[in-house]
Amino acid sequence: SMYAGVPLICIPMAGDQMYNASIVESKGVGIYFDYEHLAHSTDSLGNALYQILDIDEYGNFNFNSKYTLAAEKMRKDILDDYDPETMKTMKDKFLDKF
Image (cartoon, rainbow, N blue to C red; front, side, top):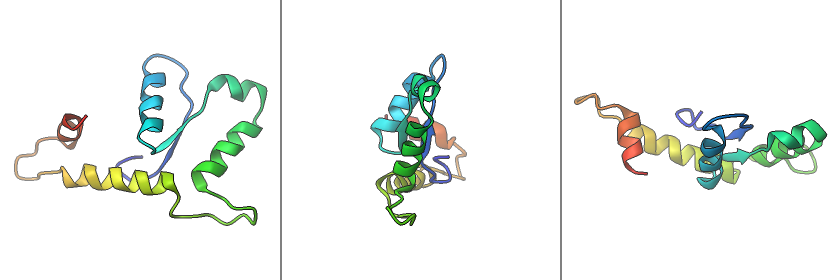
């Protein structure tokens, strides 16, 4: 989704997913949604969706939400790192930054 500039709602369940979801949230490109909350209420998942989409009280989307802007910036960073001459993977160059 970062390659496409799309924000995430992460619902980690096992393994390294919790860590990856926390990175997504710390970079501002998505929301870490605790799986335990889903078992008790779907309202909180709806709230996370409203946050990501930045929907106002009239049901309008804000296409310049903080999550969308952060995801677009990360997309640009990923694409800027692509070097077709050397074919060094985008992932390798991107991960070098962190």
